[in-house]
Every structure is written in structure tokens, then in C-alpha cells.
Image (tube, rainbow, N blue to C red; front, top):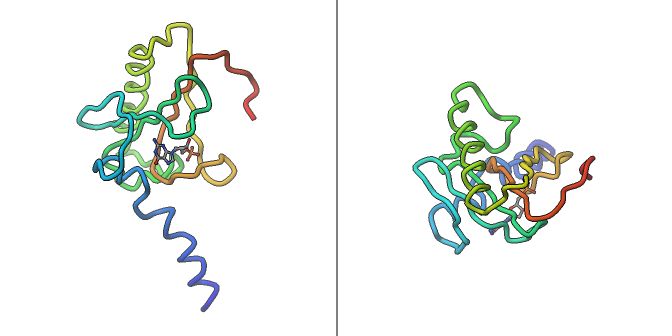
Amino acid sequence: MAGEKEAALAAEPIYGPTIFDKIIRKEIPSQVVYEDQKVLAFRDISPQAPVHIIIIPKVKDGLSSLSKAEERHVEALASLLYAAKVVAKQEGLDDGFRIVINDGPKGCQSVYHLHVHLLGGRQMNWPPG
Ligand code: DGP
């Protein structure tokens, strides 16, 4: 049915490769600030704070978003948060910072490769928008 095909096409970019795969493979440039065996951290192209860094798992393994996480991803999820702490220290965010994970359309997720936003260098507000 046409409706099913449209739905499949619409879903393709969500579960397929994203711009972050190209960043991992260094096919497009990024300002990498931290890298280890499991994660890559680079400056956001559209910063929302003086420090705005994206932290991603190098191996996506189905983690298009946090809501897709399964028990096998627990270690990868922990690695992202620990890397966020390391990078925050590296960036001198000693007075505090914010971690954000956008999930799905209502969470304003635009790139479907799980990522943590590390924001800092200014006073954050609450509640968030
Ligand atoms: P989200 O909306 O939570 O899916 O965040 C995706 C972020 O990724 C957004 O803040 C902008 C950033 N981004 C998108 N494309 C690129 C890119 O090509 N390079 C870099 N450095 N960041 C990107």
C-alpha cells in the first residue's frame, strides 16, 4: 500500500546512517574535544551555550535514541555519561553544567544517533523550554 511505503521512507532516515556516522569516520570535519575506544565528543555546529559539546557512542548498535535502549546498552550509556563528566572537567566547567538527551519528535531530537548534549559556560535556566 502507498501509505505503508510512505511510512517506510519517512522512517528510513531515523534508523539509517546519520551525519554523526560521517563525523565518526572523519568524512566530514568536526572539532573533536575527546575520544576513547567507545565515545567521541565534538563541538556542536549550532552552539546553544559558550560550551556545547555532543557526545556519542562510536558504535550505534541500534541506539538511534535513548528510547531504543536495551539492557545490552547499559555499558555504552554509562560510558557516555562518564565521558560527559570528563569533558566537563576538561572544559573547565567547575561551577556546573547541563546534560541533555533529546528523544523523539516531542523531545526535539533531530539526529537519530543517540547523543548527549553537554552545555555550560553560562547560567542555565529551569524549567527548560
Ligand atoms: P538533537 O536536536 O538533540 O538531535 O541534536 C543534534 C545536534 O547535532 C544539534 O544541536 C546540532 C548538531 N549537529 C547536527 N549536524 C552537525 C554537524 O554536521 N556537525 C556538528 N558538529 N554538529 C552537528
